[in-house]
Length: 136
Image 1: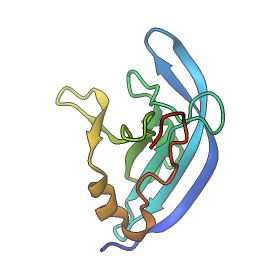
Image 2: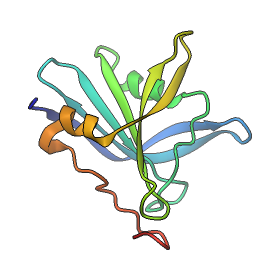
Image 3: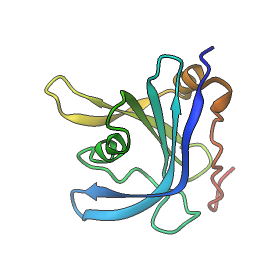
Image 4: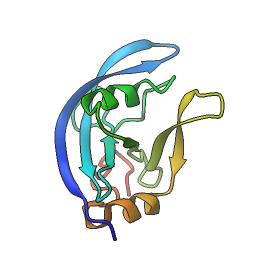
């Protein structure tokens, strides 16, 4: 198991999301960044919607958020993940930023066990519990 060090836990990180139909808009979410034994960084964005305390989906058509995270740590290799809360208690999911064969950046679903293996005890599945109506 890899030991990790928490470098950043910013509960109100402000950034810009983008939706093709709505344009760009400001968002606030929790951003955490860890360093593993190989000096590689692992970032986790836990999404909120416009209002604090309300879970949100990743509003990021075009995958513009990862570059904003990388700008915070320009001298490090960084793997970027995001957590989307479940709206009805069972729809939570994790995604990872990556590039397609043509170099286009995109978000791809990733199983939570991947993060558990990378972060060890620092990883807590669904720590920002969904409290919306109907959550189970």
